[in-house]
Amino acid sequence: MSLSIRNQIPGTVTSVTPGEVMATVRLRLDGGQDLTAAITLEAVKDLGLAEGSAVRAMMKATEVALATGPVTGLSIRNRLPGTVSDVALGGAMATVKVTVDGGELTSAVTRDAVTDLGLAPGSPVVALIKSTEVSLTSV
Image (tube, rainbow, N blue to C red; front, side, top):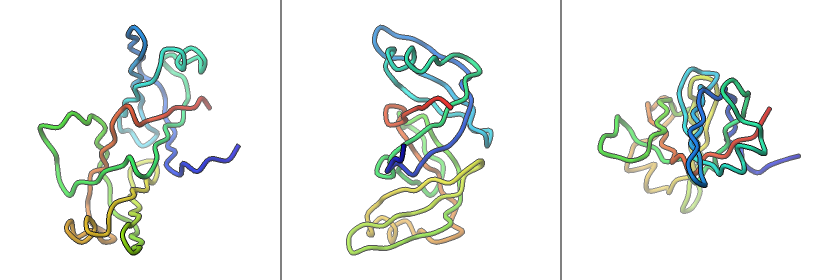
């Protein structure tokens, strides 16, 4: 199966915390970072997720925000430090490729954001991803 989601990073489930309908699934990415996905309990059961399960975390480029330094006072828990490896500018939008430990992420941001943040290859950034925007697939 082919997917249009380019952001796919392998990891291992470290915990599953069930709620009434949703669960939070904590992962240790192959690069050593922690990531949290908020998915339905049905999905946890369908994928057979438990501690030690191998998974692939996926997120759309439009759901990856970028910061140029540490961020505080924010509910977004997934904060992956990285380095800009490429910037492709369009008329209104841009894609920014970010190398993180264990993989690469693509972020779709406005061209103005690239300019305002001074994003260029070599720039240090933090990729910010809401846990509700992380999808999982079993490996």
